[in-house]
Image (cartoon, rainbow, N blue to C red):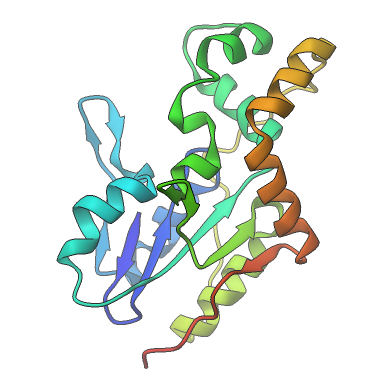
Length: 193
């Protein structure tokens, strides 16, 4: 997570959505960088509910909140390749499908309601960079770090149905971002400078 007090901007960085690249390239533009481990938990992936309860009360104003969202099955495949338990994707899905971090909408919502102001498609990082370039008045580029190349996944039909049911909200959200051209604006950004 990155926080800019000057621009009243927060970037939520979900796991496997270019978070390493975002922190590496953008930390110098932000006042606060939450990028550490605590008891084997990556704090840079702060969920919206945690932010709302533990961080927002200490901010003087309302901040504009953005994030990158990845196509749900691609993100799951990428998460699976990172885990050290060497499970096949189908077995990995069955083991972890109920964990909060597998669901992007859960991480970006508070009390079941989407908490962010603008969402970007992982496959259109150019839009994310353009948005930030306009804010920081500097050409923003993201390096490619920590990229995984999940193999072409062939799943049993029952697993596909289960994924579609369990990640329904993620799939709907991602389609909305795609239908908006890769950048879903829920609330417009108002410059503070």
